[in-house]
Image 1 (cartoon, rainbow, N blue to C red):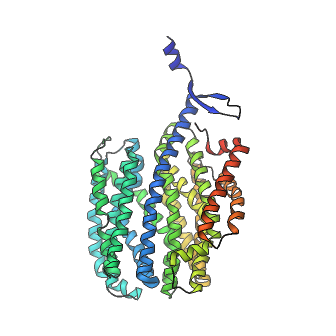
Image 2: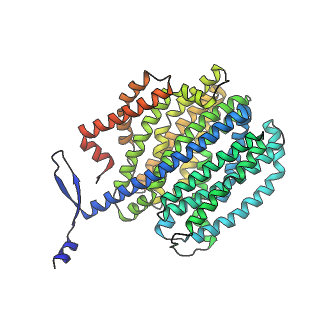
Image 3: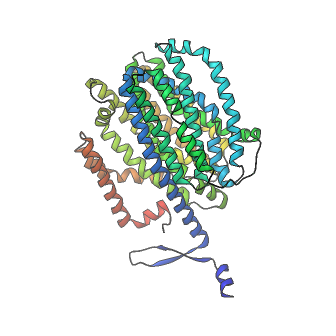
Length: 508
């Protein structure tokens, strides 16, 4: 009888410390479940973020290697070809990774069904590559480079398509709870690009040789992911490829637009600016922002299973905790990058460039740093819409961002050059955040934005004052900034514990 009453009781043993005296307040079963989901989202985000930081550092090392090995002009050509190749390779993805992140958790599709759909798309990509092949010489002539660049485009399409397979296998591992295996897979994937590109440059290869080396670099990661999946369970019903592709179509449109979205400004700059070296310098600065963008992507991806359960079962702790986490990462990243833009530009380019080149790259970095808070929170907005079953809304949001970005870029680039492209990126990201926030409210799955971002930026003031005095020295600025930021957070948590609980929800 006691056991029956215990099960019927709405009170569980989970507790929250509410004061310095150590008073323990009992928590209802629903609140405990919400705290558990928020904690699971935090754990998932932490593992995913650690994997992304390590793997993206390898990716950034590859970027630096290519920048210095190819030179600014050829690196600009590589950047433009990479954008076109990435968009073409997206035909082989068609939103299936985003669909898998929810479908495998909700068990609405089996992994085998998703794999079959990707195999169908692989045939489509091959057919498109064959059709586009004859057009590549004209593209190479328009770029002002040799015919090898046309062949490099096809090789880069293969690189991105195979990398997409590796990332898809990583999503499947994460949804099955094998988060550490996904982390290893990402390291193998990014590390392979670095190793293969380095070997090609050591052999004296040019753009085509580097592209060929990159094209085969994802194969070890794919083999590793396939081996890892064979050791895990495969729940979910079998679904015909046609139905899978119909369901992923809105996510596919969104995915393509999302890939194009942060590259609009670079493309317009490459079309309107004749100075290929200046285009390459802007592309180098843009890679810093893309590197930082892996943080919100990883946090949102790690929280996605918990977000999906919150959308199905109710609550708000996961969104509140994740929004606070992203804001507390975005604010110091934005302020810090603006302060140390010049030494970061020097680290990117290395020796041998004119002072004006370093200044131009640093100027673009300072402007684009203002986009980081919006860019970080946009990842949670998109994940929340997917988790709440509103994936069909995403293409409209990203299409609006792309349209506005093109309009801003064509208006600002002719007048301001690279700085105009950077300013357009900032304005487009903040507009996207406003539209996404409104969409989440319309879906009755609102995401807190203004309050966590405002508090995070206010908490950056001590860090900014500390870093400003050593802003010319990156080795000093980074640890001083990190320590002052950590001290500020510790002080806020101690002096305003109620605010901390309000932002991040119950912690156990």
